[in-house]
Image 1: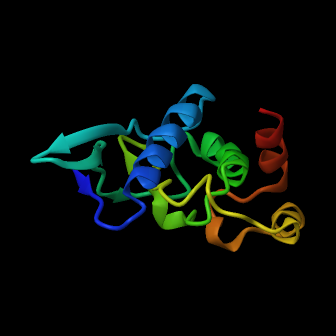
Image 2 (image 1 turned 30 degrees about the vertical axis):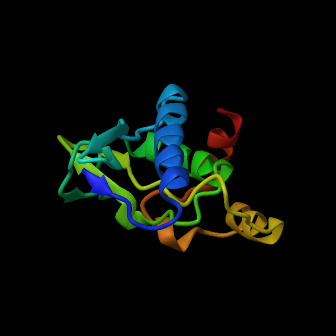
Length: 134
């Protein structure tokens, strides 16, 4: 269980759950996130993965397509270290800073026209555009 302590508790919990549910419905490799209450404290619970993502994952194409989803939900905290793995498949984690943030248009255009350095294992122009069409 991940316990939230700051004033954005409700927003972060809702964002994690919403992002997980909508992303999974759209077919992207996100872990299932559920709300959790323990001793009058609120948090979320999800499977704990310890293996980092890498370029040889079985579902690397789905991860590449998910870059567009991550941009769509305005996940300003997206980075390669938020791709974890289990049984040869990658899963995107940590969406607590999505949805309520603002990203200038020039940043989105930069992602379309240049390699996304935070996503060396994902970034390919073709798969980004495919993700936009998904």
